[in-house]
Image (cartoon, rainbow over all chains, first blue to last red; front, top):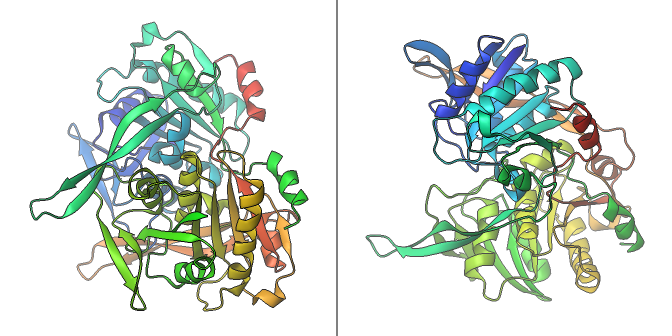
Length: 250
Length: 250
């Protein structure tokens, strides 16, 4: 397949190189990724500023294009402008840090994949439940297999698969679970500090994690060393509430 | 009610002042809004950088607090740090430009309201289908009435109301429709240009709008001069697809 590969940790991250190496023998892979780390940018799109594209080499060879924008920008510009013909599949990752539970809405990794779905291209987001690792084997073994299944069966329009892999070597993965986005979230506070000129500033700090007890939640599968695959879309409507609101007669 | 008021056009925008003036007689309103325009930032959260808060005056009186961050940052810091006790309701807007169809996922206005819902505070996002106006009466008449209904009836946890008002004076609004998020989206291209040093840059341009023929879509209500109210949540799971994916036996 013609694959667009992107991420939100930036084009020099380890995760995007690992998945590139796992896909390039079998597929025609084009990398368009942010020049710098873009974590937690959500679905930000750049239109107040221009975007610049520059070729990047890694390990002595041409690797891909760095964009002065967000992950969603990378996908939008690659599909509408840079890749002709457009890609048949978009892969976003491998992100360091799981994108499960409420965190999905903050994720640049997932938003890149969602942007592809909006533009009519099937997509997957891939994240690993680790903040530092060099062993991406649980992802690099599974993703080529998943892509073969997707090539065969297709995805309905507008759908993205949000894939999260546990931080264990490939041989210790217990299997694959199809999950729903759960309710796990971080409880956060702000540190209130003073700068060298005695001006106050605030810095976001994670205080604790609120888990999700639901067995079929994305975070639950991951915690048991399963790969989690969640089908997601971008229709945020809470359909069951529509009739209730109609009865209010606003 | 104790209301937190925010937006994504920035604390100096006309829309946030219009809704402030419509709410302040009846409610205890605290403004925490971005220092600068933050359109299309989506659900971006700032954690790589510190945040600064500064008091802002408008028309010779204290108006609120400007934050060096995104709309979602404003809500997170106001609820967890700045407002004690926390607000009972978050209002985000009035945004210039409708947030309907696919655009909802890019919207800082909506993401601010979603962040409130994540943190357990009921919320509404308010946008007007206009890019420049001084007549916000269709919103400033409806929103106080909507807030009275919400105070009486409440919203289920995690739900936000995405409100879009037509660009007509209050007297020409045809009514209120409860809608679903539709499929309207912009078709976009990039202008490819050269800077004064002959380096190439790209700039996003709207080429056309793909409408949504569905009568109950948010954009359809708006086009007929109805106020559109859509209940939205932050569970992106495409539930119908879960069983299909299980049958693939990945």
